[in-house]
Image 1: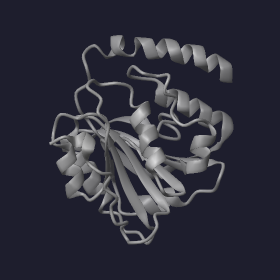
Image 2 (image 1 turned 60 degrees about the horizontal axis):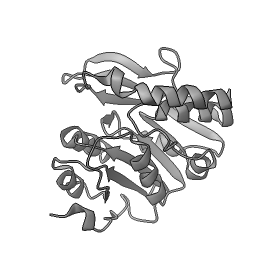
Image 3 (image 1 turned 30 degrees about the horizontal axis):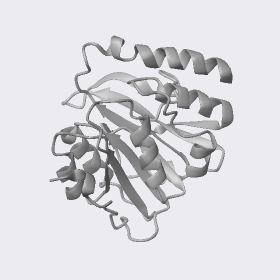
Image 4 (image 1 turned 180 degrees about the vertical axis):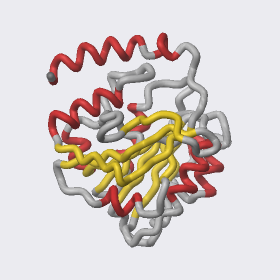
Length: 234
């Protein structure tokens, strides 16, 4: 199957209607964890019309089948290698029809059925960041990724902001072509331009998975770009 020729598949919002919220996810070769993530999102109970957009940055696994099963808007990018997720994340946000973007990682589970409602409660000029913990297969907490006290980092493991606010600061910086630091830089832009709501009442669980052994080498180029760019906004 030539996935590059597949049409964009808009789901029927749950519940039906023009989406007010767009849940945007970029993914690459993580079908199993994505399946669990999408299942947790679909457990939400809400009257808010929403859509889920998954941008697949060239996966070689069965990501497409998983997305079909969950009736999401699926966008395929024909990228033959792993790269920084800034491009697929921006594609997801451009595809979004909702006024509110729920921006999250493909491996973060919604821990309760009210997360969409809570993240959608947002005024212009504010950004929500949920509390996210890394967990093992037994749902035991391993480490804190974002929290108002334990690890105060404005990173979109799970959070929300107005779509217009996202694009007002340029979205994800696509100068980051190698892995790493595009999320940290976006967080610094958010800190400078908007007010942050640290929503510890919203809990996400990051599914633990192996990381590349040469991660330090992979992020070296992005680290240089980050250090250059951060001087311009400090």
